[in-house]
Image 1 (cartoon, one colour):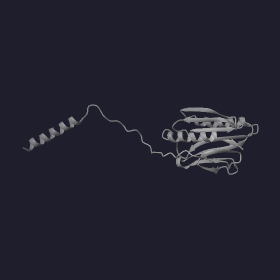
Image 2 (image 1 turned 45 degrees about the vertical axis):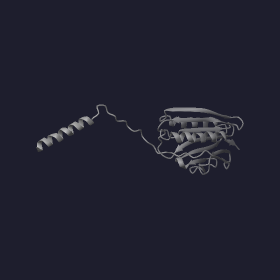
Image 3 (image 1 turned 60 degrees about the vertical axis):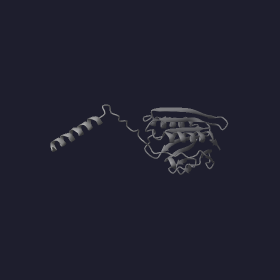
Image 4 (image 1 turned 120 degrees about the horizontal axis):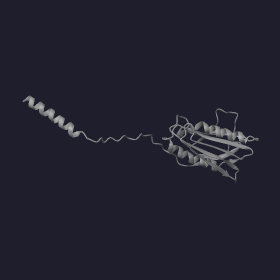
Length: 195
């Protein structure tokens, strides 16, 4: 009797295993998840404490002197603590050396091309305030600075700006933040004026 029960249980277990096995796998991997990023409201304030230029900056940002260049009064960092990043702005006077500065920008962009999967640039022309330059965006997972720009009046002033994050970049997951900051950089450029 015990043998019949054992054989019946084994047969039942085998039948359940056979019935429960699906011939076509139904497995779908879950996409990689990222933390939710809360983006602040767009609101700007005028920054006119810098000697050579002024601009509007997001209220969620903090403008601080560049700690690595204390003698350069026109070099500032726009700290973005919520996003663990900053926009570095450096100013240099133009004395028949604009070509050298433009070559430096080209060199800096070229350094990042190894990791970039695409590069877009657009000209900046604001005749009213004599602000001319270029805005450069670099796509790619490991690009250290996804956005760079330079502004000049072509005779006296040159400003270079670059967005950096304070961690190893994964620009695929940071794309919503990068898009958000792009709007702020465009606003900075559109409100930029020489003093």
